[in-house]
Image (cartoon, rainbow over all chains, first blue to last red; front, side, top):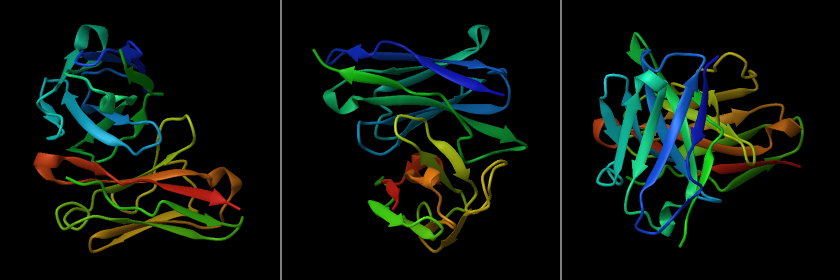
Length: 122
Length: 111
């Protein structure tokens, strides 16, 4: 059973950079899956941020692409999110999730972390 | 890319059926059979309920069914139960530039 767990600071200053990590247990990050970040502002809907394959290939939301970097650390079985130039609009619960690949890539997210709230405030 | 449009809320009594619509465009819902639905209870992570328009993952009750017509996808919950009270989000693949777009979310209330 794959489990995902987000970690990182809960408070980021305006104009600062968010750094979050998602630890993967119960499976290898080098398996055929796309590892994804999704966020949810308080009281609002979900927004897909981007994803990474274990090879390092990435896909990003065009609206965030200029500020986002997703990377993978195979030695630690985890992947990370960096979002720079943070503003109050980036305050949200950030989730990591898995998009599986079985022969072909699926187009849904079957495992999710519990989420971590990140607040942008001075 | 705008979010897919869902009704803000729907409600029904136990045992009744409710249907949630998810309206997109010819660039997302209308162009791909890759609509998924997620259930989210307060303070919890989303849970996959439907994938590829109408497929149920193992463990999801068959009370949950879904379909698509043109640019609109729909999720139906039959035999509504108290534990179905939650927020529901649709999601569609939108091509190799936008990738994934979620719906605005619908709160299901069991009266």
